[in-house]
Image (cartoon, rainbow, N blue to C red; front, side, top):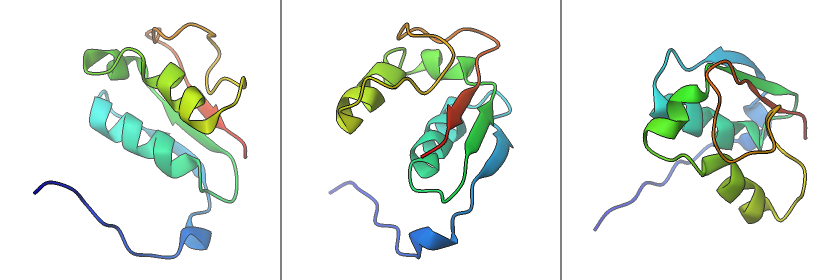
Length: 88
């Protein structure tokens, strides 16, 4: 069996600015965490996401069932200097 359960208080997530340091796993985890943050979440260096999941942004938008993009680029491909910015 595979999976993960994280218990906690989502209201404790404030938001802020974070760098992935080029790690696609950190970038995607922070993107998902940013969805429940109370304030804006900005993730620097999201180009690394294309390493493992080039369509991540598009999939995330479809899961959220919204036309709003989570980056400066409407394309599913992630550019090298792209920043994801969540303000929910």
